Length: 334
Ligand SMILES: NC(=O)c1ccc[n+]([C@@H]2O[C@H](COP(=O)([O-])OP(=O)(O)OC[C@H]3O[C@@H](n4cnc5c(N)ncnc54)[C@H](OP(=O)(O)O)[C@@H]3O)[C@@H](O)[C@H]2O)c1
Image 1 (spheres, rainbow, N blue to C red):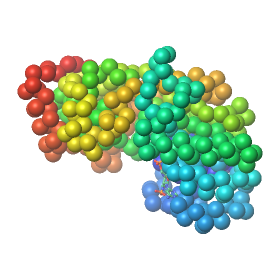
Image 2: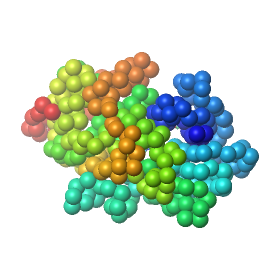
Image 3: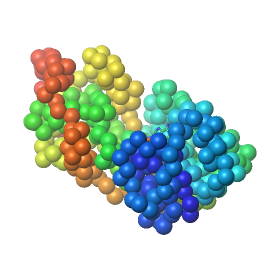
Image 4: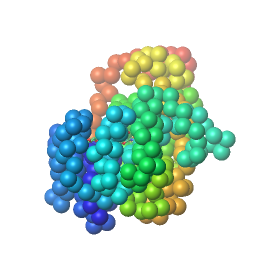
């Protein structure tokens, strides 16, 4: 099986490459070669910028892959360029979308499955949905077989671990120092967190699997956490108990809407998805990394790369905490 990954050296991509190689696939990655090459020597590298559409399309004009996986498609223009580049030149095209295409509503049965209406509330979600529609049309026109995969929050070495408030959290350093951290609401919002090796496994085993042709999939670990669970399990990786101070999401966001945009757009809402369909069609998709083990690895990697975020200079966070505690809210162990 010959597979091309557009991207290939990023967070989820590295999980995909690992499992594709384990399957015995011949893997080629396409990127700008701006990142450290941590890929095994077996992986072929092609260099270029996918946004230089004419060059990008010309580069693949004489190639054929069994599977093309686009990990970094974010706009309809990029999706249209993919269709021009790969129509008739691959058996299957896998597009990495996102659960943000569903928006923020919760179904009566709580977990969002693939039949839930897609009503994205962010520009990111709207653009991903527009890309999905372009690929679905290409599938219907038999340009190639399309599989759309929607990860939710996915983490691992190479990226920070989000908390309830922000993508690159200072909360983990505060927890390590025995200081309380902020959490929105009562910490009872629902969340799922999937390690990139587990998410990558789904992509790798969906490849060239005819059951996945023409299908959309959520690709999440099935364990659903509250934010209390999330902080408890991640803090265990630091050998600590997280002390949570609960404040309304709007109160937190108003202190710095840009910094706390993740909370505003995503994490103040439930984010829990049903991936039964993915497990049915791709039985190899068994998630093996629990949050405490994955957080241990992610924290070690952050320190190794000198990317661990020190909380001591974070005066805004401390002033928010002082304000919350002064209002009479007491920390609660997660
Ligand atoms: N992580 C999550 O929680 C989450 C959740 C839902 C969906 N997703 C989706 O997951 C995908 C991200 O996957 P990932 O983590 O594997 O990727 P990533 O970390 O975003 O990696 C980016 C990759 O693309 C390459 N790249 C960036 N710009 C490029 C360009 N203009 N031309 C060619 N190559 C370029 C990078 O290498 P160079 O910089 O060297 O070019 C790198 O290989 C996105 O589609 C995102 O929407 C992620």
